[in-house]
Image 1 (cartoon, rainbow, N blue to C red):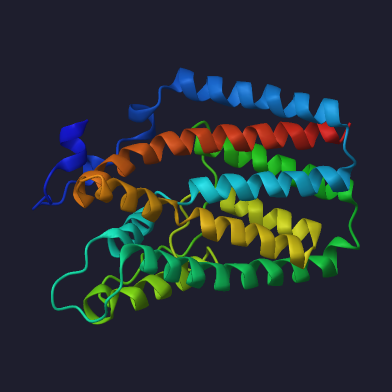
Image 2 (image 1 turned 90 degrees about the vertical axis):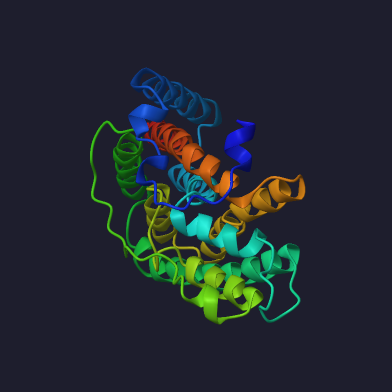
Length: 278
């Protein structure tokens, strides 16, 4: 593991560095995680006995927390970590430090993310008032179960997205702090780049269903801050003497494990929502 964490930059592209889901987490382990999460979600709903409206809000909060973890480990997240945490190259403009760039990145992400969440909540308030919370919760539970199973590789669901990565050329033409700020602003809304996790869809659907601009802004802010995690981890790793190439390699491996946990969490939230309907 030490060798993996400290190796020098790789001169050739290695597309297989990110393992398949089956290669990273066994089918038995994925199904076991999902079953355990379903039991936990159903148990929580049984004990709390929330109303449909309360359960829907709780489910959205859960989806936001899952998204803040799961949306990090794409190549976009790694690109951000490379900009924010890597030492500034000689000759580049500016006197930024990794911590300053992290702050700029968080500012850009929260600024656009909070606005996106508030707008989605406002749009939802127009339609949510005319629909039964029971039906909204039922629909959300169905999608949560389907995409949870999608994440653990049991079924295949549509994953609409803009398959666009962060513009690499900006790293060569702009000051590092400006790149960090702009990358954050692009990432904040969630749909302007590659969508790494299905949890994002459940967050958007939930914010629309609840119809609360305040909840939407809060959850998208949480996601924006959560998406700074790769950069925080990269800064900590390099300060202990590790290399950025090594860090990025390990994160590609972690990606699939996070995906399995995400799928299980969505199944658990689906079970929570379903039992809350009874």
